[in-house]
Image (cartoon, rainbow, N blue to C red):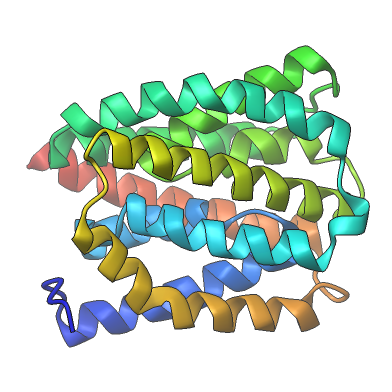
Length: 244
């Protein structure tokens, strides 16, 4: 097996975090990256951001296939239009950032995402709002592996199936674009792919669990839990990065 330099304890933590994060995203439409990236970056930076980006692609594709009948097809095109330039900018940042700088960037993005998602702010669905959300999502998704919050904010007041299917489509297409750009720029490495491959069984287990959770999950309570855990992890990551 490709040696990614992870200890047994680090790998065990990674598996547990990914199972939980994948189950949450499969249940409410987003959350894998917001929950897992700050925690896993503290455990070992090799987990993020590109491996978690690949894992988010798997869950996004699975969600799209499972709930494709509720997809907001019209809005999808405008969001993807915005994600392309955002992804290019995010890939450039990722290619020049040091590990310490990336830790700070991830921590700040997570805290901003938590603040926005926790504010109760609503955004009117329009062509402009979809493109802007796609632009921000493309940048943060590529540079920090966290592209869900801007899209979750945009669709947060829609019905659950619409949110999950539309976010699933956006993640599937958008992350494919992100990974293509990262590959062209030489940022994506064999280690990234190997880490994602190691954690793929965990993400599949989490996604399967989400199938039974969807009818019973209280979206607001789950969101609050994600925001609390993500805030604590992001603060820890910021402190350790700034201290380094």
